[in-house]
Image 1 (cartoon, helix red, strand yellow):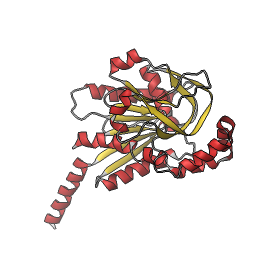
Image 2: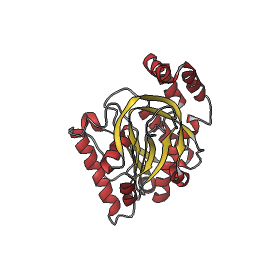
Image 3: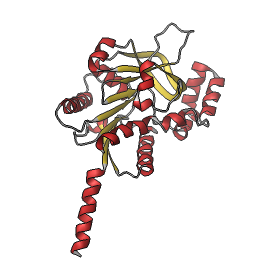
Image 4: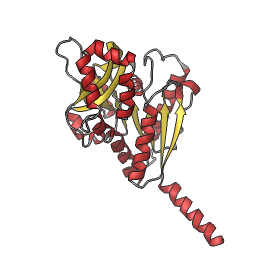
Length: 287
């Protein structure tokens, strides 16, 4: 009996020591979404495929003012509804930026295990405001659908883009954008602009930034790398979303987006690369 108990203690100690802890910061503010399901699915599949113990905790940032502490190996901050500008004086944003500051402080300390963050969509826009990485502003019209994302020079060497083609396809869902990158500030932080949106020669607007490496441990995407065909198909069939795409791009474009969902080289490829690549970076540091 004592031997069995000792074996159990040793086994649990090994699991705790060798497990990965991921915190997901939920910025959806209680709004039904596919993003959180997709994030959980990717992490669980990654753990299974790599025979890893990955523990996930979720934090309701906007509704409950919940943020994680510094004990996690990695953090994923989700997309979410609403304006990334109107929350300037809201308490949840103060709490969120205070959390981000605590991770910054950890990473510049002597602690050997650094903390990685992935910012998605709304979180990406907030991070761009926090770091003064570019101009966050409202788009002339909503961008929603499956679109090509074009890599810049630094994107080819970016670890979370490993295995992607140029352009690659991603799900875009936003009323806001980041334009006019602050290259001086990014250079000072060790940051780089990784990708931009498709070229639109018929309109006189800046091309929005689609991904930024803020520093060695923080990276963000304007698009949704977690999106999968199931969730996107659900959204594209909603009447308001369907009409939004048709009004902006035409019915043929909507139909082609639906077709893209079946193509393994489109959002499926992005879905199976970016988040797993991000997790690879965490695991390689931990091992």
